[in-house]
Image (spheres, rainbow, N blue to C red):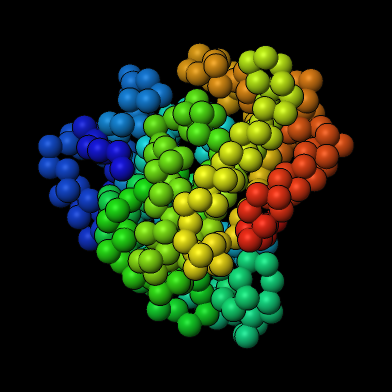
Length: 350
């Protein structure tokens, strides 16, 4: 886990409840500054990476919207946090802010009350679907990495306890970090952690400041033993050629990744492990930012001859793999999974 020790904490007045004050007490050496809005920060005079290392924001989440997903979960829960210590080059969260430090929302009781009211309004027993056979599932980490947030506030443990003990709800989140402290909590299979995986040498280039792929794979057995349900998230799948122009390079690298996974997991872990597969979508604004921050990554992410444009639901100008090509790549990926790790069910792929 990264050693996150902020030098400055920005906070809104309404964030200083018991949870907010507890976070401040963890970092007594940090300078503190009140701001009017958690998502409208002053000029900090720091570069992209230093902001993520040195700044923490405490805010109150005003809207408690719960959105239908149907993919990684049934629903997307109101955010517990926004932003991440990592600096992944394709991150959609970073696209929407000029600076994006970790922001913790301290009104966790409101978050959990909204989830409780929502899940109790749904049909029960739950109709079985690919998200879960029994429980209504809520993604609690769409805008942050919960493995990092877990060490910053006891509120995340409170959230874990809520889902573990709830008779109808279950939590899920994707992560690129391994937090050993989370192994001390027994979620009784009511929290699904999804370790994001891609070929290791590509991850080193695009998953900036995250834990290595080797470390993530090695943690899967441990988290299952601790009581988590563990899945994997092959995301984003990036299509690339080798240095010699070999167009099958990405396929060969994924086969090697699958073999690593097959060799590492115990039989009982394989039996419960499922996967999600999401091919790369990139963004024009992020592309421009990356040309200054990480231009080598853009050689993989921005490949116009393979991609087509798409305007997102939020008005952003995105690119994704051309749809007919993508259909073929999806079929190739499914075939490789069947060949190398036939025990791994793909819950969804797009």
